[in-house]
Length: 149
Picture 1 (cartoon, rainbow, N blue to C red):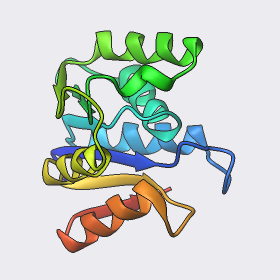
Picture 2 (cartoon, rainbow, N blue to C red):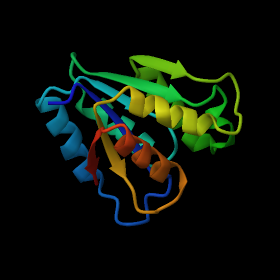
Picture 3 (tube, one colour):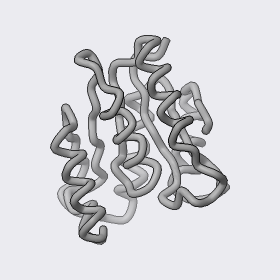
Picture 4 (spheres, rainbow, N blue to C red):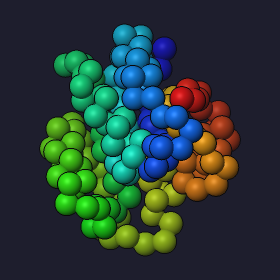
């Protein structure tokens, strides 16, 4: 049983066959087996899909925490993406903002925060570079359990 779960995955979900129904099944199974705290980095792509899955399957005992690397994270998002992002944020139980504005390295700080606050990482990793690769390697280094989709 894992009490706390974090998510990390690529922004582009068209690489490597992302399966939203598999993500939903994993989230449901985690909730059924006692996971009550979920942490999401709120990046476009996998993070947003994971947050939506948690919100769709949430029970009274389950919490979702949005972990923002910086307060202006959504500044470059499209209008449609901004609306979805704000809708998700409004339904989160907690929002943690790690920096007031973007700086080089704030995304990695967010990724480390996610791993430092979880027992298990659900990840969608298809490339051996980038933020998800960094996060998965940090999770391995910290001895966290991985569920790879």
